[in-house]
Length: 637
Image (cartoon, rainbow, N blue to C red; front, side, top):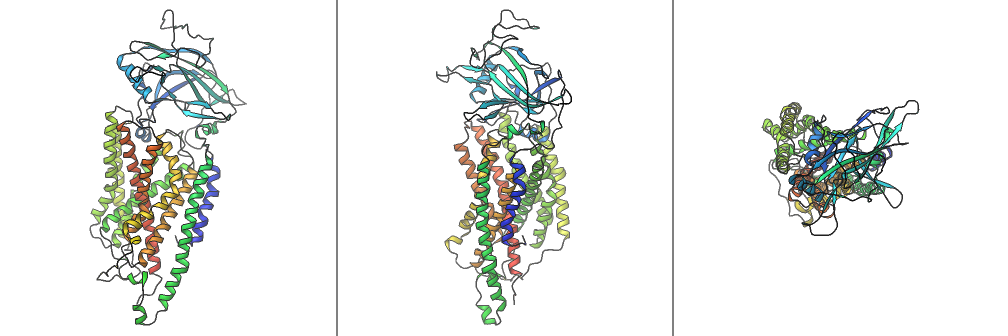
């Protein structure tokens, strides 16, 4: 923060040039090693969760009465996958590399009353089936009018027939799957790598003459026929109705290389909006930087020069503005211990966010590494406890606090306890809905162990190291008797100025926020971390600058209660974030269930709270540096 405002102006442009070019387009780095397949090699298809943007409640694939193998085996999961409700299991679908098959019978199922009811409910809620082949998710290729195409993640379980009331509506199931596997062949060897996995779901009322379990033959399709969507009688979902599940698989050579196989999934058709977001944010930063530069270079330097030239006591008594409160400006605030706790927690969140973004930029948290982002965030949060304890203790010692153990305990427990309480209630609601998104007891225990076993001791270690350091010295002495604060103008009232302060940091990020919410709640991949990192840097600069500007105006009004005001000024942007999440809920989501609504607002509350602590801490430290800088620059008699 020691550089001039002009340096701050140029910094985002430098970052922009360095980062946006390689990261605007997706790329594929560490995560999963490529696998080579020879002709005839087995390709097992794995099944993932059933997901819906209407309910936000994932379900296990075998919650519905689909064809299942003799033994269902769960694949190895990381912490992130469990927290996201991902369950990856084996399936009855097995292909042979570069061997086309048509109308292969998977199984025959007789629907019971319960299974028919479950199918109908899930079709009503627009649930989609997610499958994985060689770590690639299945997608439905939707051609557009302009000749391009887009990918839809997963395929619909079924659809409702037109007309009729809800009670009399007919439900149809997509019981035939036409898979297309794209591969990239090695020119020197006969081996190939899988670079695409598409599906066309079709509903067909299969017929047969006699059913032979070992060699089932159908009248409606055989090995020589290719089923075309829309040319068949659909399969209705009814109690005691037989449903025959079938599938085709075709292999197609592709020019796409293995390293670029995720590009289609991650393709953003609205790069221009991201650039608009960056430019919009930069305009805010330039505006604020100009204000800070004006205050620092013109007003402050002029003030400091005038104050330092005062020679007589009579002149000194005539001083006004910010220098007048030098004897009170470093007076510890009300609830100084709580401020220390929040600042320490903010440093913990900042460290976690920064390192996570750096890992994401380097490609270590690619979508192929399922649950990697969530796992990284949880583990980094735990290890950043060291910095939380240290920063909290340094501030607490400066405020001449005596109960350092109590302060350390609060730093270690307060924020995680609030988050864990909300999370526990939400998890109980998910568990009540029998969703696979409910975190199992074992994982909950692992989270508590990470918190108590690693995070808490690290906070204590950091706190011990912080207390061993000498206390931060104030640049000016504090008077024994606090001076009276004059009547403040309406626009300098704490509530008004803090609420105004939060608008610009929120304005710097709200466009990018739309894409983040879409990726979380509308089942999209978010992988443009280059843009996100630039916006994050701009957010930090905006928080710092708006807090400094408003803090300067406050001190000029002879109001020296700046400690909490500095924190709340930048932190109030979280209020706008939560209000925006309400707007997003009303305009973009189709959530109808009460539990799903509670889940959405519960998780957005957690996100907004974390955002409050992060932005508040950044604003506080910027203001802390600024106040120390200006008061150490003037001579005090």
